[in-house]
Image (cartoon, rainbow, N blue to C red; front, side, top):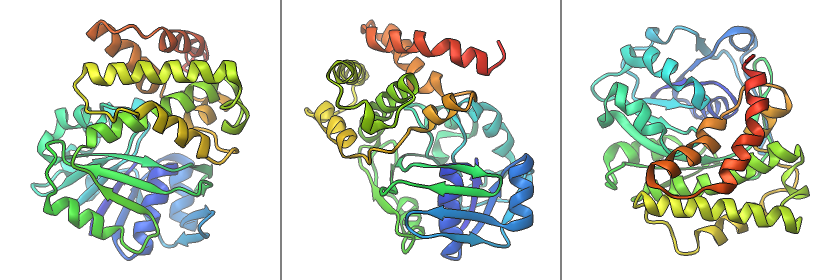
Length: 308
């Protein structure tokens, strides 16, 4: 399969390298020192599942060079979505599928509004992986899972083809007939982990069981649940309990990617992980006091990172 990775960070770099290792024709879109290191030394993966290097690795900062890929894995930070999707418009062939593995709940719609929804596949991933140094990705979680599906619920040939491309990588891949439910359920966990990790600067094992903190985590999850139901998403009746259980089962040393960005003083995905709750709550008239508070507390750090 001919594959283009848009956003060769912790997620795109790891999954793209795993696909390249299986023999697929993978091109990585990167920039700056990260691109230069990949071009010189290959893309190095340091993983709990085993280290490996893709060398030589096909990498460029000029997406237009790749004609009619079968699959584009869209893995940029959500704040880079608008710029990145404009750059890949010339790459979209009639049969090109675009699978977003970004955080949040509206990535597929944002991308599809530019390139056409017929190209879009919505997806969610569970992994802890980040760029350790230029050209080096470190993956630290025991879980490496991707769930994706058509927005209309069909199990299509292109879904099955992508599923087949991941065979033998060791990555758990699942096809979903209700991908919106998956996205919102995952969002419930990642929003909480991102929020409280960023506020406390502690790994997940050091704040999830503190009673006072856990009470606010639960409150935030219930706000997201109410919001999802307000948008007619068919969440499980015990969605909050499921998300709490997943949080409790997560390795205690894990930190969310947004938290890592906060700790390093970088721009974050606050708008698509916390701010979207506030915005959508107001659109539907659904109160979100916990999200409002978290957004307000983290916003000064975000503005500082943006130089404002």
